[in-house]
Image (cartoon, rainbow, N blue to C red; front, top):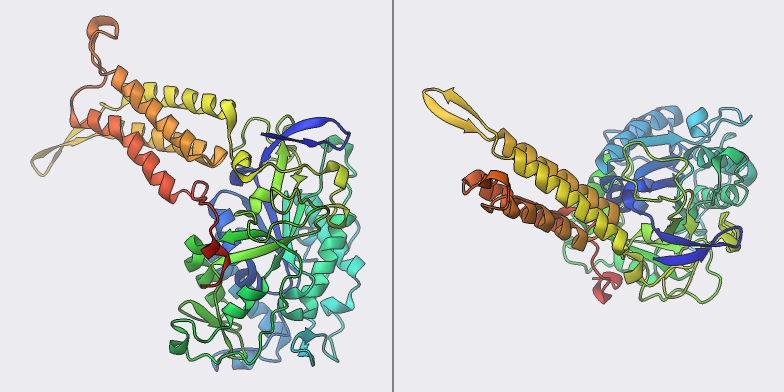
Length: 516
């Protein structure tokens, strides 16, 4: 537990936001950008219980089209837009994202607060002499880039006010490879957060969200286009004559390992069939140039006052950048999300490396005086004595209830054979699994999951000792059902330790940050 300064100057305890509590907004310009640039992070957060929202500015009307099957859509802006909407819906399903909206498309897209519903269109692009994308000579009347930054920011700002996200993720200023719509969305998102002010005093203390930018280090960008990677020669893709990616200039604040969700990311990319061809670990756009699907997604912070983050030790998770006060209830809880004691309101934002004290400032809509100072990475994840007490209480309750329940069964006759249905054991183990999941996702601590499971098993052991209970009755016997009950919680805890995304947080290594 660490302390960071509150807006009023008082010192308040803060903690890292858990995934189950988090509200994260991704802002992208076109369908397919979300999958290519941030798909792994979106899938990871969604699977971890976070409320993930995708806001897409255009429908990609100006995109080129791959393959003969959809060749008739090229140049048919309304037809291509309608088709890409279906592709985007399939990609969101692959990523587990259920909250998607188009910018300006009714109240969900920010057409509130006096802003009229409107439709922003793909501006298109052309390649500049520097090898990066730039605005085309001719753009449609409703092109995104024809709208002012302030106008686009107004719609984004309304979505931010509705969702009250803890974290917002969009492009870096370079827009990946310079696409004018990407750069326009970047500027509009920065402006939206800078001018986002909570006008409702009934919501209590409110801190604007942390802002991160999807970015790529220079070495990773070069490695992605390396045609000597194993398997590249089997794809049929063309090698790049030059690397079009505009590499990150700011230090990398987050190196998000998404290898566990590489399949979901690839499926989401492949759903955009008019734009992307996926072949194994590689993909190509309409130009046919192959590049590797990254299993680590990198992010830079909105700003980094003070010492630069250590580029060799960025945060492992985007949620490590978000700190919340432990004393204030969240005024906008996500329905069904697990919330620890004292879940904070808006984030006390800190973005960058823990040791460096990096944090988002007023350029991202977060004032320096309201930003907390992160602890070292180990301290950020320490649940404290309160978490241990919580785990013990949960373990005691589950152990007692499960022990009393686990021997219940029904005997049925099945084709002349007597079959015992151990429904009591099934309920007891389900109760144990639910409790362990609750502790694991709430505290992101393998130790507390094991402590809970050990407490459950210990209570079962006590209930199996004659003479320790009135009448010397055995609640837990020497039957197979009792053995399953005694050892089942520990087995479930072991399985969760290897499979629950909230617990699969390994220390960063050099191999994670250097191209393979």
